[in-house]
Image (cartoon, rainbow, N blue to C red; front, side):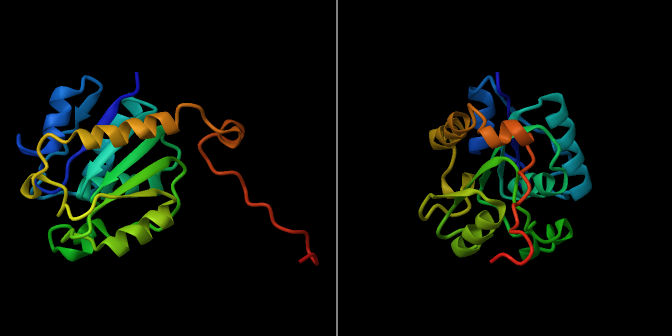
Length: 199
C-alpha cells in the first residue's frame, strides 16, 4: 500500500489544520515530526524527510507551505530517492520571511517524479503567477484553487477532502509507469541532439 508522507509547514499543523485531520482519518497517511517547527532548520527537515522516504519507498509526498518547499528542495537535490509523486500545496517563497530565508531560494530544476502544485489566487506567501512559474520549472501540473489564502487553518481549511482527491489523482496518474520510465528508471532520458551540421 502506498504511504502518504505529510510534511507540515512553519509552526506545524495544529488540530484544526487539514494535515492533522488527514493523518487521523487516513490509515495510509503519516504526519511527519519535523522537530521545532517554529525555528526550522533546513538540513534537519531535509534529513528527516529523506529518512522517512527511505523507510517508506515509493510513497507520495504531501507538503504545505515550507513543507512543500522542503519536498521541492529534496527532489531537486536528491533525485535518486524512491518517490512516487508529490503534492505541493501553497508553496511559500522562503525569501519573504526572516524566519525561512535560510532555506534559500526555490529550486529551478525539473523533478523526475509526477507532481502537482496547488496554488491560491491570494496567497500572502507566494503570488499565483510565481507559483505557476515554479511549477513550470519543476515540470509540475498546477491546480488553481481560487481565492483560498494560504490553504491552512487560518483560511478555513480544516477537514479538506479535496486534498485527498488530489492525492488520489496522483495515485491514478502514476499507477503504471510509462515506457520511458521503465527504460530509464526515475531519471529522465537523455535529450536527443541533432548531429553536427544538421539543422
